[in-house]
Image (cartoon, rainbow, N blue to C red; front, side, top):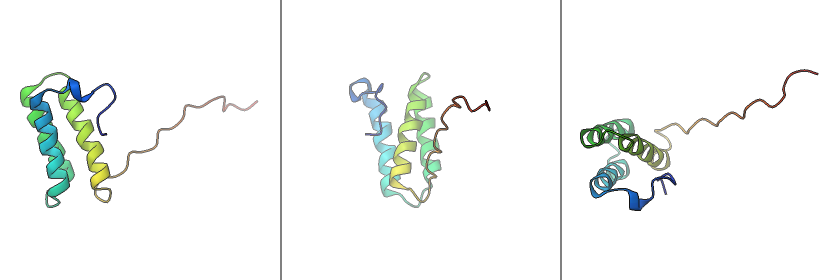
Length: 90
């Protein structure tokens, strides 16, 4: 559920799935390790094997999981501000 729609499971190769599973495991079962440290480490692992969008995807997926699994540790995403729609005075 943390995957973006443009990253279906079928697009993720075996190595990248292993990186995501290991990161997800640590987020869930290693509360002694800060979430930001876990995310950073697994992004670095992804960078060792991939150069394109994969490290960014790892960051996004693990960040989403951290916000779900550790809500007290990781701040919620700020709400997006709607663009101004004719706020000028008449």
